[in-house]
Length: 160
Image 1 (cartoon, rainbow, N blue to C red):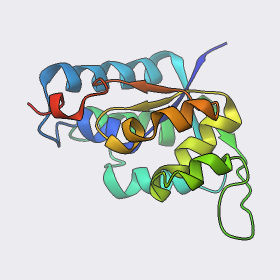
Image 2 (image 1 turned 30 degrees about the vertical axis):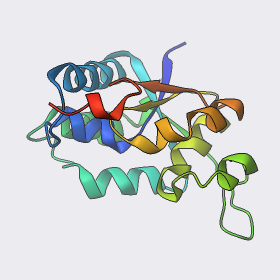
Image 3 (image 1 turned 180 degrees about the vertical axis):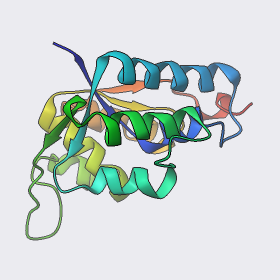
Image 4 (image 1 turned 135 degrees about the horizontal axis):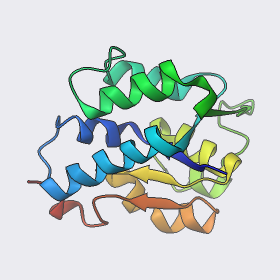
């Protein structure tokens, strides 16, 4: 079985070189996306919220960065390498699969789709430089949402 990945958009942005980060951080993002493209399965939501976010930040032509290439290869060219999870919403608009403790902790609403997809698919979330994952790590992991910190857990050390 291929490894499954929930990729926060910041990983592809960092791989593109669009942020001022350390070379080790950028290389970790590049390597992760290479692994996804070569031998992984990307988890996305069936409603398309994750794809929509990728579309806002990445170029579907696959140019000029590694993050753009990831978007082209996995999302556009290899639909068989995606796992779509259905993430129903509650009446208040929150994801049913997202534990209430995560919502109550004030976890960033724009990242909740990634957390819910990770929970539903039992796959880790990959993060490069989004401090929300670091700040809420304990509550996320207590709720069964595992996070892979490609650039470490100390945001002050991310910058190049």
